[in-house]
Length: 157
Image 1 (cartoon, helix red, strand yellow):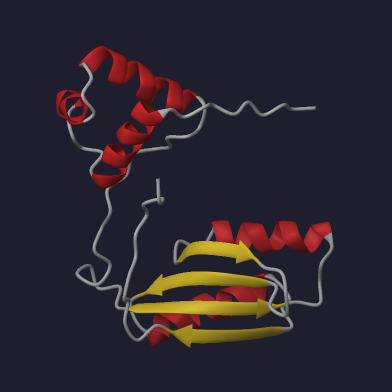
Image 2 (cartoon, rainbow, N blue to C red; image 1 turned 180 degrees about the vertical axis):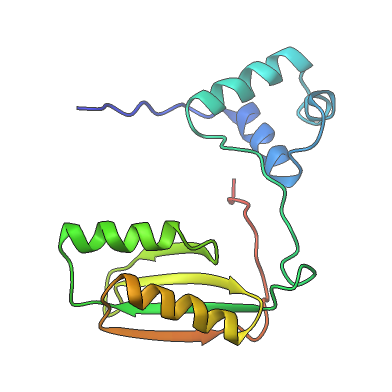
C-alpha cells in the first residue's frame, strides 16, 4: 500500500508558490527578494516542493487564438458503459487526442466533461468522429464557448 506524505506549507512556502504561479520564469534572486529570503533557502524550498509533487513541470502558456485555435468546446458525455475495459479505452482515446485540454469524471446526470480546443467546427467534428470510432458513448453534447471571460491556472493561496 502506498502512503502519501503531505508536506506542511508554511507562510514562506506559500509566498514562493504565489510568485511561481505569477511567473515561474523569475530568477531565484527575484523570488527570494520578493519573499524576503535568500537564494539558497528559496531554491531548497522549491526543490522540496517539487519532490513532494506540490510544484509540477514548468510550462509556457500559449495564446490559443493567436495560434489559430479559435474554437473551444465543452463536451458533455453520457455513457451506458462503466466497466474497467471501457474506461481504459476511453482514457487512451483522450490521451491520444491533443485537442482535449481537460477531462473530468462527474457526479450527476453527465458522466464526463471535456474541454476541447480546436481551430474550427470542422476540426471539432474530426475529433468527435475519432472519439466515437474508439469508444461507445450514449450521448454527446458539445457546447461552443462564445467568449472566454476568465481563465487562470492560479490556485487561491
